[in-house]
Length: 586
Figure 1 (cartoon, one colour):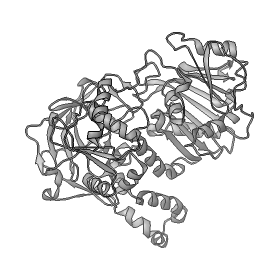
Figure 2 (cartoon, rainbow, N blue to C red):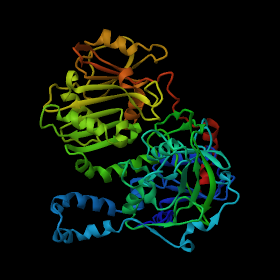
Figure 3 (tube, rainbow, N blue to C red):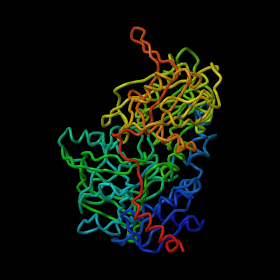
Figure 4 (cartoon, rainbow, N blue to C red):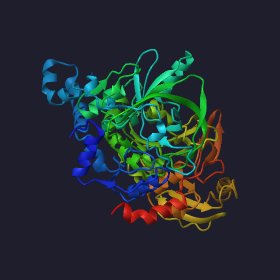
């Protein structure tokens, strides 16, 4: 079923008994977010809050927080068409009328994509125009107690390049500053940020329209890391299976998405910055306050019975995990077409996506795999990847313990560990000690195994280490003093205990090994807490300009004093929700 708008999707969730309506009044400051997080943790339903304190608009959350709801939102068609396109590619080249006719069953739906204008009278988004503009009447959520204010968390931010006119639809958090002004959190490597850069170079304001709601396909398209030239509205239309309805409005710089719930229109002026944040983000920590552009709101349009869509981000797994998994499953067949030599690719939602990626690549000549790794690190937002693991062995990349074991069996550190210093870093990753800056590591495991990995640790006590735990064959977790108490513990462990760790290619130092019980715990705890240049320890030798590493490799993944705090709910809010829980869901 194709969903042209948010309410169509919500109605299907009602029919399938996959959404719960909460009729008790709920506070958008912290309380609603705590309810949402508990439901996500329990793999619970979508939520519709019909009485939100301080606003007349209902709030819908957790719409995409399960595999089943993602499939209902998008349907099977996109995956079917992509798979058919991949398998038909050889048959369509070179193109001919007969070949095209044979593939008509999937080509015809794909050909229906695009945008179309509709009359103003048929556009629900124009049913109401807010006058005067007042963002404070919207039920905007504050998710964590140290957040800098309330934020739009599912905004669809539309911009057009000031020279070429090419559009971008991205999802960038939007903090409410006042009744008619917000922040605009354009991170590096984001399409909207590129448009603003061009406008600012010309001393011009950039027109911006922020949509809330609309076809679920719009949300998925805005989040997907598409190559820059690919138009998100066209991709959304492909996912939807029909054209996106747009409407022209006098005085608005952009056509509006006719089926959106809200359209917030205005401009981002050049050379003006305002503190934005902190914000509890999808890494599971607070991103700190930094100066970002401001968005001056001039008009707000909304449906007569508009529903405000929102999500809550925090320590994985949250709702965004399911969106990311669905997107990757959809696009995986395309990677080998875009990057020949790449067989499969996966980024890990449990670690915040950008901190960790893995790939199965071709190795038909010496170090071909490394060339494919550099290709991956040069591709759009994949260039923000901090750690890239690669092998030429066919393995399920989603099964991380098996992947890591496969690499460690084949890992030659002198050749297979590449550390690249002074690179761009994801804005939300503070491990690199400088804002937007850090380093990268590539770790390869190719060919036949060169060692048998130990399944248990039997080499006796380690100096300075209180706890030892095996994560998988060949990977050891250890914990001792915290970083503040002994910042040199990893270096001391390498210096004094290398012999005991000789059979273990990889040892990871964490604050408490007992907090790691599954793949999600491991990926989040480890890969969000180290920078390759600063926190990887290994024996090293220099041959002219070549650094060769030896074993054991030790990663210091303890919390450092300069890292932002991990997210924890406020105790009084937890108690309040405890007390109200039965009444909320009666």
